[in-house]
Length: 351
Ligand code: NAX
Image (cartoon, rainbow, N blue to C red; front, side):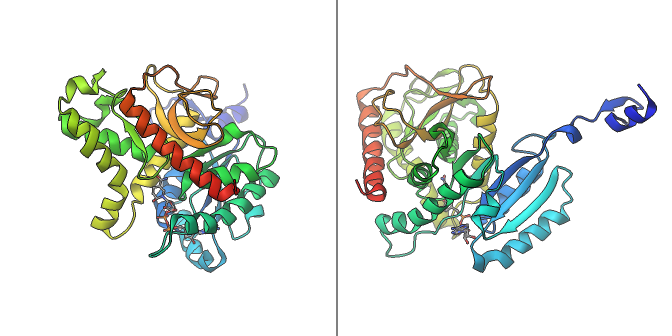
C-alpha cells in the first residue's frame, strides 16, 4: 500500500492510530422532506442532517419541498442547515416543484399537509389534502429512485398515504407507510409512569388502526420488564379507559398546553420510524407503523393503511408479527378503527 493510498482511505486519530475512513466512501442517500418550512421539519431536518436517522457514517442529500408562498421561509431553514456545517450533508435542494423534490429520492417523508381549521370537517380535510397526495404520489412514481420508500406524517396520515399509493403507479405497495410511532411512544410513557418504571422497560406495544382518536394502544400484548402489562398494573379499569383515552387524546392535550401541535416529539417519532424500518428489530420486540393490509392478518380489511405490530428483518424487509392473541375487548377496538379507515377510503376513492 502506497502512502497516497493510505492517506486517501485512512486518517490518523489523536493517539496516532490509522482509522479507515469508511463514511466518505458511502453513496449519499437522498431524503425528500415535504412541508420543510413547517414546525415538525424544523426539528426533523437538523437531526437527519446530523446522522441520527440513517447513521453517523451515511451522507445525505436533502431535497426540501414547500408551497410557493413558504419558499422564503424555507430559505431561512436552508441557511440554518448550512450554518450547522454538517459533515454528512452533501447537497440541499429547496423547491416548490414536486418533480425536482422527488428526483432520485430514496426516502420521501411527506410531512406537509394543510392543517384542519375551525369549522372544517374531516371530509373537507380529506378532500383538500387528497389533491396534494394525488400529485405527490404521481411525482414520486415518476421521479424517485427505484426502491424508494414513502413515509407519511401529514394528517390524516393513513389515508393520505393510501392516496399517494394509489397514484404511485408501478411502485410496490409494501413501500408505503404512515406514522403511528408517536402514539406508540405516548402509550409506552403512560404505562411506564403508571407502573413507576423507566420507559425502556415497556416493550411490545402495538398501536392498531388509524392515527386518530379511534387508534387502539394494545396493552393486552404489551410487556413491562418482560411481564404482561396486566400482571404489573392491576388497575385493569384504568388500562381499559383512561390509558386508552389519554393516548388517543394526547395530541389535543399538547395543543391545549402549548398552543401548538406536537412538533419535536413528532419529528423524533418520524426519525425513529425510518430508523426502525432500516435496522433489524431487537429479538422478541416489535414497533408500530401503518402499512398496506393484504386482508390475511388479524381480520384487518384488505387495502387500507393500518397500524400493526411490525418487525424489520436482517435483510431489510419487514414483516407483520403474527399470532398475537386478540381478545374480545381488543377486537372491538381494532374493528372500530378499521371501520373509520374504510370510511375514509370510501370518501377519497369514491367507493
Ligand atoms: P405546519 O403547519 O407547521 O407545517 C406544514 C407545512 O407543510 C407548512 O410549511 C406548509 O406550507 C407545508 N405544505 C402544505 N402543503 C404542502 C404541499 N402541497 N407541499 C409541500 N409542503 C406543503 O405543520 P406541522 O406541525 O409541521 O405538522 C405537519 C403535519 O403533521 C400536519 O398534518 C400534522 O397534523 C401532522 N402530524 C402528524 C402526526 C402523526 O403522528 N402522524 C403527529 C404530529 C402532527 O400532528
